[in-house]
Image 1: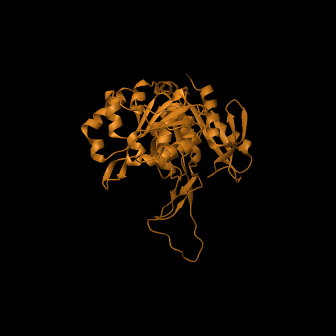
Image 2: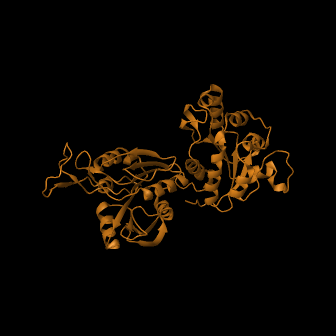
Image 3: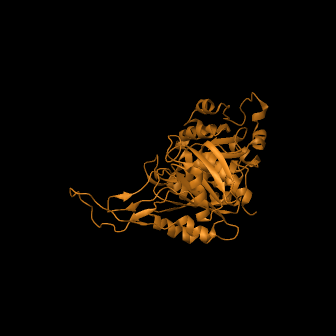
Length: 403
């Protein structure tokens, strides 16, 4: 899930004195895996909870631990780092650092540099519930948000103080997903609304059985993440899925094709781009048994009826300037079947993918696919990570989407 802005981009990871400081090691690792340069900064309190050597081993960069420590290289002076950093990520962020940042207190390296930087600042709070809910802390958060600072979390759950409530550091993966759009320079979908259907659907037969499919939701997630990186407002209508949606999307969870169709009809008119990536069941049981169907020692016959054709309905009522993208999951005749679907659904693009190969299709990280457009063009993508497929698809949409 590397962004186009990776490689030499620097993130200053500020770690403060929360018991959750150890989780910042995992966050540092996730950032490094994105190809980002990570400069760890540990406050004095954080050093009592997590060792600087761990962060240095993970990031390959010297950890900054004090304002007046002997400097082996002048480039780690706080002003120089403040100028070159692309993001200041404070995780965990205690009530203390939030108060300092809100009131301009500069009494250590981190608080001093927060005053000097013009880079985006992202706080991931972690503290006792009463501390988080205290009017002073809430006022400090509001002040920082008014100044343009960003926040992710906190989560609710069991805290280190053995109380349950809000204040738990949100998962490092979620923090990463909140950080990546702040690091990506692309803004070609800013102000645009992207609606994506994702996952599969479940059509009940009786209270315990259903007709379903193998969709994992990984492609829908990749599309949503790519749209977020490009600053779109993203809504995902998702059927049951083993893959969580990325942080920052507005999600609507559904079970059946009819429920998905209802949500699409409600919000499709607000979409600049509609992508039908869900594996929607074509058929459902005509009658659903109110009780579990028991084995009877004889064949069981189910009468199936067609589900709503969501993509066709949207194509029929397409709005001026709206871009519609459909998916064709095929086991044979990939191009031929995709061309027929493109015409029948009145879509602008069809992403056709081969789903019967071990490295492509449901549940895989990669996809063998091609993009067909309404002008008759076919772009062969070969085998790519699903994140790269999403990037190429959005490049094509951006070239056609009205400014």
